[in-house]
Length: 126
Image (cartoon, rainbow, N blue to C red; front, side, top):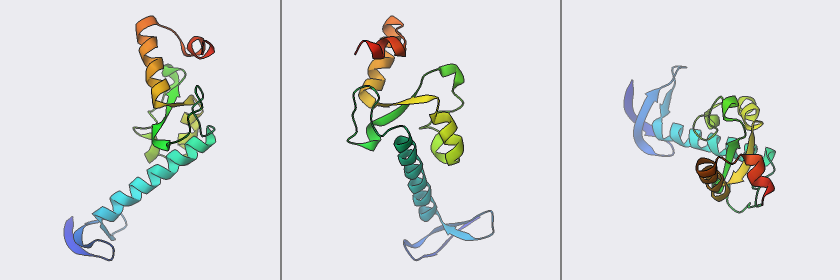
C-alpha cells in the first residue's frame, strides 16, 4: 500500500507501509539502503587491508573489488548481493576473496580467459 504523505526530509513524497505497520518515505528507505551498503563495503575493504593486493592502489573505494580465488566456493557475489546481507555473512564470503583494484581485476580475468593462467601464477609474475 502506498500513498503521498509528508516527509520531514523530502516534503510530500510517496510513502509505503512497512512490515511493522509504519509509514516510511520511499526516498528515505532508498537512501538508508545505499548508506548501509556503503558502510558494509567500507568495513569489508578495511578488513581486507584497504588496498589492491596486486598493485597497492588505495585512492578510491569505488575502484576496489573482491575477487573469489576459487569460483566453486563462491556463495554470492559481494557486489551483487553481499551488501544487503549481514556483516558476518558478508565477512564469511570476503574471506574467500582477495581485494583488487578494477584494473588488476580485469587484467587478470582477461589473461585467465585468453591463456588459462591462474591467479597465483599471474600474481607471482608481477
